[in-house]
Length: 358
Image 1 (cartoon, one colour):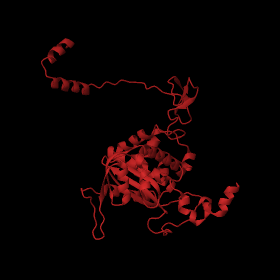
Image 2 (cartoon, helix red, strand yellow):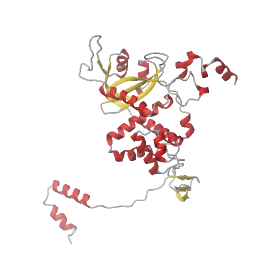
Image 3 (tube, helix red, strand yellow):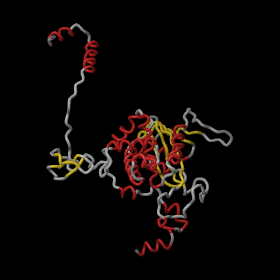
Image 4 (cartoon, helix red, strand yellow):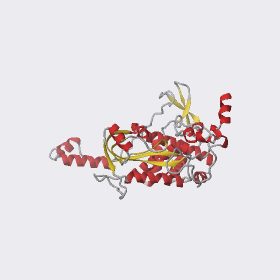
């Protein structure tokens, strides 16, 4: 058997590169499996003084905290709290969401109801939105705006601010008006993406200022030639590289060779989301946009068979979201600004008088 002294004596005559390579080979060839028992921490008080306390009706392990005397499971205070689905079922559902399946198809493959899949989807989307809204864009940024029609899908008849409109029927106003939702789209040189609903009507300096908290250390703002971008770049203390407009000739590049190709591709994706999901309510539009960004980032980084697991890891420790919170998601726009002129439904004189009396 070779002794430690012999090894040291042998390595004395070798150079440092040889020793480093040898150590790396030894490290790779020796698989040491150390079984470490992870400590269970109480999610309510943070104590590590816990003990097992049987299993629930879904065969999930329950625990009891000796300090706060509360019962909990591994899913307590997480996105999956109060869900009867297992981790494997959630992974399957997330995989369906990445694939872009409809709620009807997801309900069929999950062997559950469309309502259950609806709540699962929006809990997942809300969590994705929280993650994306914390990301910041920097350095060189392409920026522009896209416009969506107001969609009141799921609104009860007594809560409608206007007459119900048949799909495909022409809007009351042509072009960009206060009946259109303005979505600011931007992408930076590191492929960080932003799609934020900023209000109704045409893009403006005030609308772009509402997303300034999503930008950090911007050096160049690539845009078209609207004056609001010049104002916004001055506010950011950044260079404004813009595409000139001409009545006789189309321009696609700025003077220094930049284009809006990436942000234009993002804006076309919004139309693809609407077609794939058969349209979505404006109430949940921001969550749909943010989940699409997170889904895109996951697809860029990981192989197809790893994507669901990686997305699960990102959202699993998020706070629990109640079903009531999903249903009571606030509108990201002012319906009064859009429809008060009609004096219909919730903006009718009779309804407003009734609200005042009650």
